[in-house]
Length: 348
Image (cartoon, rainbow, N blue to C red):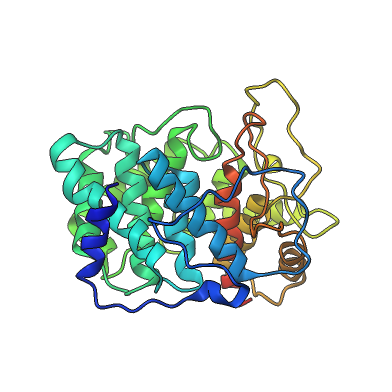
């Protein structure tokens, strides 16, 4: 993304900046000064004390560095960022720059070059709708364009041709994409779900979900999340069973481990870590349980929040080991986003 283009787009906005990072002495991150927060390491020391400011500083840095270096969007980094950043404040330069880059996909790159994959359409629509709901509460015209384009690539089965890169839990099977599309429609402001286009698309999604049960508990939890917006994606018995399964996997330290939410095979032939709690597992489960209606004061969620507050790393992130190979551990970016969202849902 060309920084001069984004600066020009931002110059047209009259929104002032909030120097949130000042409280711990860090410069507010922008596309122009973003520096990589460093490798996601399992041996990074724990923070001396919990800091939400450091968490969002990490997310700003990771997302803008990804934009600068990769020139693209990914489920685990800058799409996740658009979900999480409004949980604190969206009124910062970093958020506006990532949002502007996502909108540019829809308004500039898709008309000229087309989406890279069908999955990019769904992931962009979902991130923009969630971001709209969490910020202005109104469906942006660009978001509506992305949602409408989503239905043009829906298959007869009701599903979508999702990325199958063997990078779980986000980029390995079609079911994830279908559930993400349902979340996009359900969360979209302005009663978008009631439009004829959405009703037709949702009929296809329900048909797909009827014919294709979720392959993992993670995906059952995704359905639980989607059902909080759209009724009848799960039965009451299915919702109750999903909640019970998630609660049964809480560890003695109060956290959850992502690897326990599926039976994914690693690409490096090592064993999955089924014993440790991590940022994604803990943040995701807390967030979904809150969306299911569980009160933040319930003991399992209080224990989970305590785990998050005591297991943040010095950089502000929450480590999550890759489910595929011990290399970049980019799930740590999504794990940190989910942790911030979970804390926001629990009013922490």
